[in-house]
Image 1 (cartoon, one colour):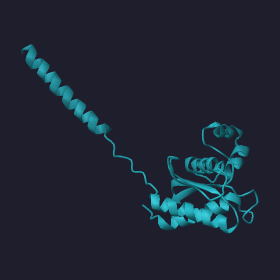
Image 2 (tube, one colour; image 1 turned 60 degrees about the vertical axis):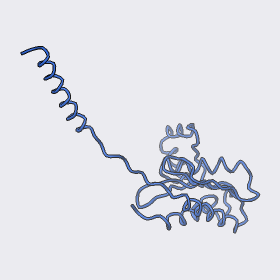
Image 3 (cartoon, rainbow, N blue to C red; image 1 turned 90 degrees about the vertical axis):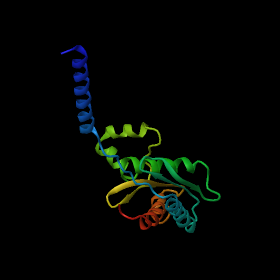
Image 4 (cartoon, rainbow, N blue to C red; image 1 turned 90 degrees about the horizontal axis):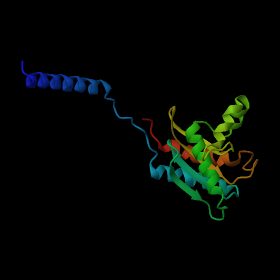
Length: 174
């Protein structure tokens, strides 16, 4: 047997083995659900309308599952710094998949969890809620601007809940 035939045979075996290995490692694409921009906008507008009815000028952010902003609105006359608060609340709720008010409880039970607050855009202030379709978290909503105890004691979370209800009513389960 000549060296060329041996080399050709080894190359063919290697290609066959590589092809089989590649097939064994092939994975389906991951499908992630996105909140439609029109639905995010409706939710943000519902949160603002709810707060304005109580005399509160707020900022609201709707984030996707990755914490990326889908919509941010600031009511007429609302302070500009509220934008940062709304963003952090939406981000935290989407990332941790819990209402931001629960973070203080988590930190009390596990003091090491306080280190999460050092991450960019995290907060333990109330007013952030995860957006769920069924049991899947698809994003977060954050509201800032209602004084603590305002809105009948519901604070920012009460207005966020109004936006959340609007969003979840418009989203179909996958």
